[in-house]
Image (cartoon, rainbow, N blue to C red; front, side):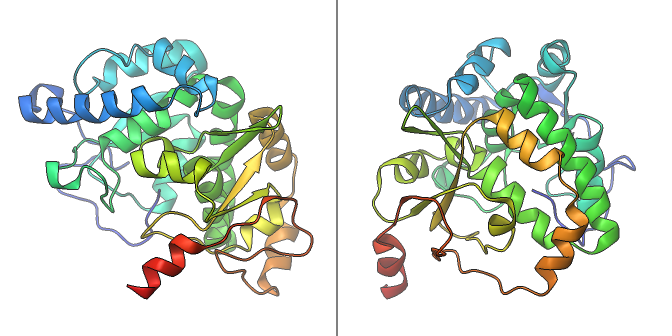
Amino acid sequence: MAQAELTLPEGAAADWTVPQDWASYTTGEHAMWDRLFERQAAMLPGRVVPEFMEGLDILRMTKPGIPDFAELSERLMRATGWQVVAVPGLVPDRVFFEHLANRRFVAGRFIRKPEQIDYLQEPDVFHDVFGHVPLLTHPAFADYMQAYGEGGMRADHMGAIDHLARLYWYTVEFGLMRREGRMQLYGAGIVSSYGESVFALDDASPNRIGFDLKRLMRTQYRIDDYQQSYFVIDSFEDLLRKTSDVDFGPIYHELEGSTDLAPDAVAPEDRVYHRGTQAYARAKMAC
């Protein structure tokens, strides 16, 4: 995700990119990637959308060690015209949007430490590359990401980034898909997390609510723990249609006068697939 107020790090280009410097990764860093990859790849089949697993194959990400962004970009370019570029960490919103609009996905080059294996606040190369990049091989999702970047540049000029950020959060990072009555994962924040890959589908605690653009953009979210609500799409093609064929200007204007919804809220007009107990969130607050 993007970040608004940051200073260009020393050594970074004007667009905030840096060399990945793949040769500098240590044996321990490659081993951490392999450990994370093995754990997720073993539990995701049947739980994640098949397009994700297909993307792993297309990009040959089963190869041991942290992927070389140049090799990934070569394969990704052939599939959908996207590239992966390295950045030092979080980047400003305008930089983030511009890269997406030009079919470049920004990825941090560092990898988490062993003590951070289950959680870290700033996304690392495993979250960015394993979580996000496989779905960029899917044409409709790749187009959605580009359209989001283009929309982000417009939202930046309109002062509406906060609302648009919720769309990214509840789709790209923490989205679910429902096909033939079955829920599956696709959000990168879920598929790169062992715990949330189980929680998002199996736990009774969170709400699972049908995708509605304006409703979603009114909804606050959790940055410090598992989500209290997940929004469910029918397909990537449907997600692209419901966002790229929309004039966001009137929506932003309408949202300015509306009240935000809490992360655990269920609205009367919601298409509710599962009304959560919120037991997990209540237990955490009681601690």
